[in-house]
Length: 118
Image (tube, rainbow, N blue to C red; front, side, top):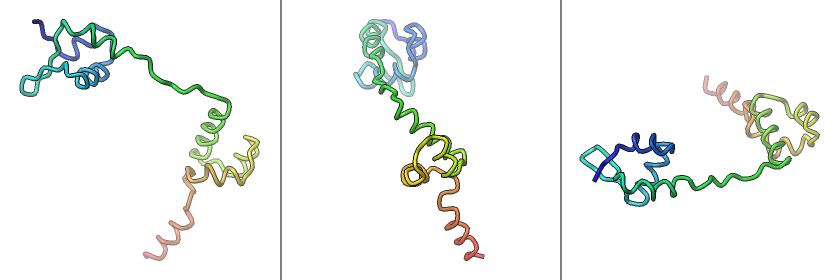
């Protein structure tokens, strides 16, 4: 029985080390020697199949792309009015859905509390 480190096995298989380690742990393929962790070479084929399952990525739509763009703009400090005009979305929607992401969100309340503390 030949034992491999997780790193060596991952390099040999062309699989990310963390993915291999997670699947090996999940399916009971790890062999431990105190703190050292090894994999049996003869079990690698089975782990290959488990690690190469395609990721379940959601499809991007124009709506999700617009949502992401507005979120990034607000996080970057763009005003409600500017975001509404640029993205063709009402100021009310920007404030209701996205404004909590702004660095200015509740800034007035924070400033008031800071002044009171002094």
